[in-house]
Length: 304
Ligand code: CP
Image: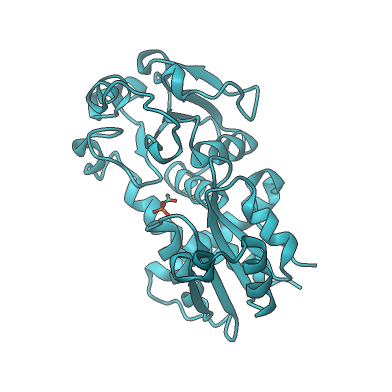
């Protein structure tokens, strides 16, 4: 039976540990440049991105090629969707071409699940709506475990546009599953009414929410998913919720900054914090995208 990766809720702690352990092994091989692997030789992976991407699209393609697969980047703008063909018919035709896996990003809630129901190959969700971005949450967990050595006794504060962020949503689900204490900090207009777990603490100010946090994860204002202007100004937002080294000290001198990207400098996080290699794990997150996605392709495509 084929396996799809649609969200992190479906993963057990054992599944997550298995993927992260494998991702660490792939990271070690990539670092030593000793990577030679044709696990997916002869396979063709189709990427279908209906929204823009730098990190996810590129790292999936690199991961696929590092494992010996070929990649077809299907392009929505160049497709016959623009001539009026329906989404469902498009998926039926592409599925009929028998790709070995489909990696999809879409603005609509649940689209990867719809595709998974209509094709025979594994489908990996590369982000849908505000709902789920499972591989981002997995690579964030990988980065946290590499830095701290384990998930024991950790607190992660997620700051920003929690209401519209699939990264925040998947991280809340995954990090609580791994036993990490999770807090969210946001202005009331960017705070969802309901959170995925009752154990997550809500705060509306950095002063209240930051003390004791080990990781501070900033989240971009997702303007593309806002129906109206929800913040007074970017300057006011940065003053109240943007992170910089002094505000990170409110969490603790040991605390580190993370951001899934894309980050908007001096709106959600300052230049000085982004560019501080001792306190920012942001580029490490970017680098981990490749081995983590190699581990996902390995586990989801290499099983009968
Ligand atoms: N973090 C993330 O999903 O980045 P991209 O939108 O560039 O893929």
